[in-house]
Length: 295
Ligand code: NAP
Image (cartoon, rainbow, N blue to C red; front, side):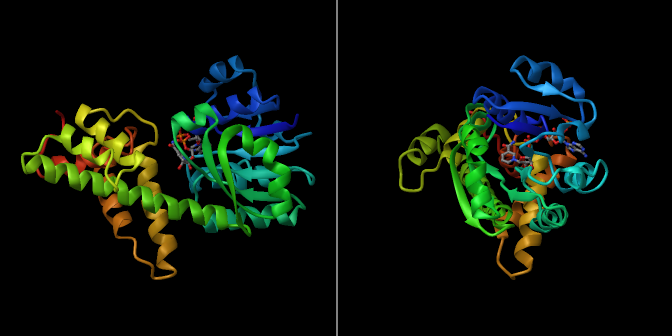
């Protein structure tokens, strides 16, 4: 049993906390909006009103926050929790952020003698709820191994990617693959519908042929039902499309699907769809050419 201080009760953090408690850990949480406290106390987590109270006596300090701005508000500036973590505690950032922000966190922790892992996750609301995420970790390998008792209860698999920052980099590489699949299923469904094909039949083929993917299946089924209920918010996909491009620019690496994703996601967010699922980029794409994907 470990004592864990946890920040961030969003879609992902809430599921993670519930699974950490279920695994027998003592978890104390802080969230900016305290309206989320009533649900999390029902699963057995404790709450605090001052985030610094998470840190005394914690073996692990874990957080899953929206974006770089949230990390700056809570961890590296604002509440400045990174500077208050005690040596001996292991800090683990599960958010999707710029690898440069991750390095800034690492510098603060290292200056204070605190071990730090960048450990963003793949999977979405269902995997967070079911403890079935896929975690990619950068940092010291011995610290990674020591952290497995708090990573395994929230994940299906964990992947040690090497030195600090490699987890954050892998997350952007993976989300580039997600972006390309969102764009390609949107283009395929829009073309198919325009050409008079039955989209149920199109998805029947896409579910078995050698180009099948879980993203095509899930996003396709949602699109023909007109269902964009949130798992991964569109506003966060916009953030990731921008992070991918900034990261890739350093290497002059191509990211055409992230460019298209940014354009579509921005149009969706500007139209007030930012809290819908990221799959809404398919709807934005189809709407632009006047195609209705609902069947
Ligand atoms: P979310 O539901 O929007 O939750 C975001 C969390 O960050 C909330 O706890 C929110 O607090 C907090 N937050 C945001 N800005 C803040 C600020 N300035 N100060 C303090 N707290 C702040 O997001 P999520 O879906 O859980 O995603 C969390 C992270 O995981 C993101 O980096 C995302 O890219 C990544 N991720 C998400 C998914 C997914 O499918 N959802 C999948 C993989 C990775 P409030 O409750 O007060 O707003």
